[in-house]
Length: 92
Image 1: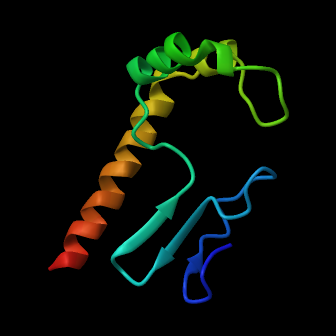
Image 2: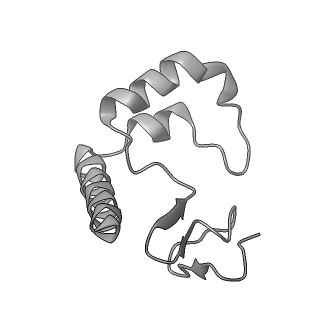
Image 3: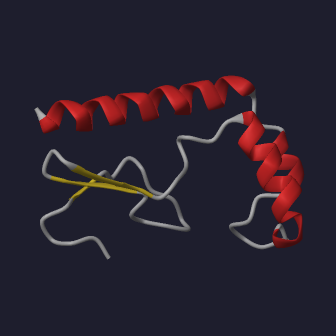
C-alpha cells in the first residue's frame, strides 16, 4: 500500500502490482521494476537464478528474459538516468 501523501503514477501498473511507481514530494520515487538492468545483468540473473525461474503467472521464462531487444535496455537505462537527474536537481 502506498502512503496517502504519495502520488501514484497510474500509467505504471500491472496486474501483478498496482503500485509499480509512486512519488512522494520531489525527493522520493519508488519503482517496482529495474531500469538499471542491462543485457549483461539479465544474462547473469538467468545464469545464477535459473532454478528460481519456475513457471508461474508473474515469472518470466529464461527465453523471454534473454529475448529482450537491446534497445529496450538502452531506453530503460536512459529513463533511469532521467529519474536520477530529476532527484539530483531536487536536491538543489
